Length: 217
Image (cartoon, rainbow, N blue to C red; front, top):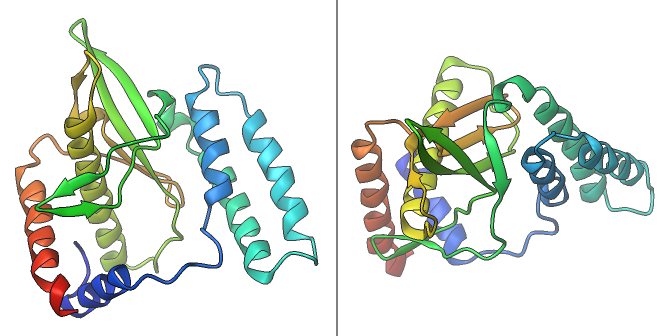
């Protein structure tokens, strides 16, 4: 959503002809982070155990260069999430189901899934949201890069709300304020905006463009 037209074509081309990555970045960090956040007392044990494992992996000459590098970056992510304790302390996180229906927009399957379920209450009514962890490294610290990262955070939170609307089977009411994009590397939390029609329309338009371009890529 925040890429140039040329970059979008490249993204679509890579999606149509994907190459199997040698590793999936932060895969082994995601589980401990979710376990930590979903714990009512927020015990650090899942994070410290994972930190020790990654330190061993980072120093193991038998591991590949990519695996050692991923271990070092995963340690940074684990420590960054601890630094967000105050920001995330206001949320009541719960484990998300391992199996989730794919989100479909304008006949395009969108690669987004809830890492955590968020519970809340307002005026005595139970509410629910989805949270998505974003653990990619930060861009350059320019005003333009920060603005793009913020916009992406808001779009991801919007996708979380749409995914919730599609999959919610609880008796709780979906709430934008509980649909979150958690930017771990930047230490920021983005909630789906209350006025979200424009962003949702933007996402559907982008998916229609992808569907139109797909046969020609």
